[in-house]
Amino acid sequence: MANILIVEDEEPINRLIRQNLMLAGHVCDQLYDGKAAKQKLESGASYDLIILDVMLPYIDGFSLMQYVGDIPVIFLTAKNHISDKLTGLGSGAWDYLTKPFEMLELIARVHLVLTKTQKADCKVCIGKTEIDLKARKVMVDGLEVELARQEFELLEVLILNRNIALSREKLLELAWGYDYVGDTRTVDVHITKLRKKLNLERQIKTVYKTGYRLEIEKEK
Image (tube, rainbow, N blue to C red):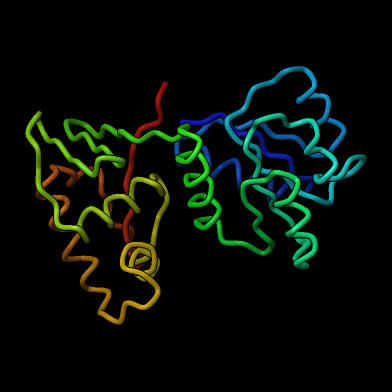
């Protein structure tokens, strides 16, 4: 779980990002203009990551970079010219994502940055099942369970996108790769194996006419 600041002046986008990051287990604060962000950062507020728009009221995202200190930043903006991207990355941002964007891609990039800065949860407990994403190790009732490479890849995708419904096509894209040419039924086969091996029949939900969702309760 990470503490993330979202600075985005479009309220629907800000709200959507917050909802999805919270579903993924993170805690989020929301701001809607550069002046408020500057005040928050100057107050000494601590965050593990900032998702920052560029075109903000009062103070733009590029100018705000002088106040973020060592907090990792992902720019999320409609400014898609290469010069803007170079400016953003040159200012010290870890990543630069342009609008329109896919929420799953943003979540994946967030996890990648948090992993690199050692703020991501590498160990996840689901009932009596413990998964160490870094060591690629799975324990059930204290005993190690061997997973095939593709089974673990699928499990990792489900964990990183916990509580979010994913279509079979999206699971193929994320776990098998863009160039996979197999049938979506292979997802069903691997889901069945994961449920049986890891005792996750109740946690890996079938989403009618869509795909699957891994349900993990939020930490209290």
